Image 1 (cartoon, helix red, strand yellow):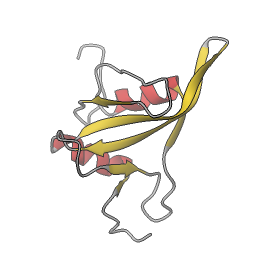
Image 2: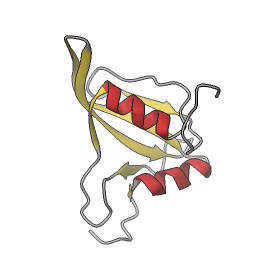
Image 3: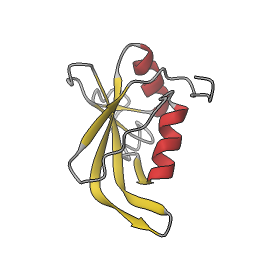
Length: 111
């Protein structure tokens, strides 16, 4: 894939889109399971407009086009907080989706 692929975005690009009003959509690809005190599954992130159109998949690099996948809820929540989400609603069943508003700047305990 080349650098002009329109339906993918890197972390830095996602921050820019969030400042333009995009939302983060978390998609559960693999139903989560609890092992000891942690939850494991498979989640991916899309940037979407408020009407749900123009979805862009989060990738690790636009040149390699490797989908960014989160395997633990802790990792996903940390990512959401780094993107500026003040709360996290995580879908636990494959196929479920949840949207989050975020500023693009890391969230802090003071808001």
